[in-house]
Image (cartoon, rainbow, N blue to C red):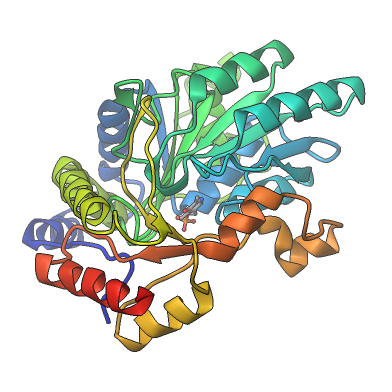
Length: 382
Ligand SMILES: *Cc1c(COP(=O)(O)O)cnc(C)c1O
């Protein structure tokens, strides 16, 4: 089976992990701040906090934003459930903004309309989690211009977009947001097995992110009373936080992987370009990338125009091609329907879901494998 996504591990990655096992602390050692600095430098953000998953990153980002019971958070229905669950973890309510069918990201027009309505109903969200679907950045400048007057915290779910660009700058630099989250799950641009990070340029948010991901505990003289300055043992728990720490083993793997990010993105881009060229004459909608973005090509999603998605999916699976579907709209899941959401509420996301098919794309996929995917898709669409 050719999978839809896969990690690439080399000897340098293995050596980096073994080095930690043999020579360093397994957790809370020097690999953590080193990885945090390397991520911040890569995406050109001031601060970075690493955590044990992208999901934890979303949770602490919401906590740092002050999201709590009684608050509202908005996100895209076309995402992994974690983009919405983070609001529920905080006791807040969630709502969705329909997508723009061309970018598959939240529609800026729909956001504008929803903000106007919410303003009149006094129901503005505390935070908005925008999702850079498949590796294409949202139009952050336009979104920021709409949310800034209301003081809404803007969180980028950049789990798909590490290595991508917006207006010529790295995604997750937080130029037009308060925080950005990353995931290092094995199908993502780089992996630490499990892992995630939050970037920000705001020192107070950076402090909150560290606090909430480490039990709510601080030992920093900056944040504890002066009277304890000479008590080396002293720490205090100031808020209810979590143990979302990444281990040094994971950080060493992530750090070794990060060095290869440019070559991973280059390989993904070349594969995407080959699909674009080879599939152009088929009755499918190919992904488009707006002028303001350079995609990180986390996913390559086509939309079927004439054929049943189920039939094409099954025919390709039968040919050992690990096609997939991203995403079942979040509001359709039973848990979200129990909260009152219904099919029909976000028609663009729902229509897109009905016809979407993710083709395999990952740096170590060979040209031969990709040709086989293309030939098979042609056969199936005849
Ligand atoms: C992968 C992913 C996450 C969650 O990341 P984990 O590291 O798997 O917890 C969140 N949002 C999106 C859009 C993702 O693709």
